[in-house]
Length: 221
Image (cartoon, rainbow, N blue to C red; front, side, top):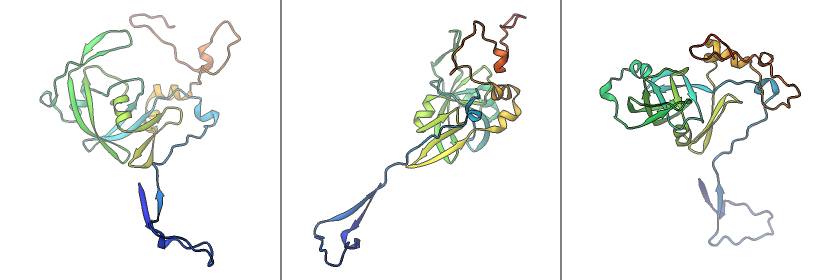
């Protein structure tokens, strides 16, 4: 954004100094605002919490919106899709296939475009509807992150987005941390990375990391 003023509005620096005002203008250039992240204190960054935010989908309040830079696309579970009052006739057919962590490939039920509002910013957002369930109501991947021109920070538990040339900071959804036992567990968990190990055995209990139980097994790892 650039503002221009005639030089006649510029006062000379002294009464004896004469300035040539011919064909001159003064310019004030305002670039988009920059973002600076301050280094958080140790007690603020030693956590493994994911970033959840609140928003609205077509005007309806939505919580447990997971912002995940590890996902390429935006995902909506079918149960949430139905709660929004949508039916199969509202879905757009697609040949999109999703692959899980184990490499299993499954088709999506379809795609839908909604008006998604996060903070004060509304963006038409395409979600791929899946049959499975997750620990989220919506998942926002890199498709939305880049299209929305924003920077999510799991460490700072906030999302910074540009609204025009101005900056808006959207805080994480702390209500999910209070309501979810899993989120509370990871809120208390310390980071394993960043330390040099001098022992032959890593005791995860020291970091309050819950044990992982394999599917179909009664053994914990």
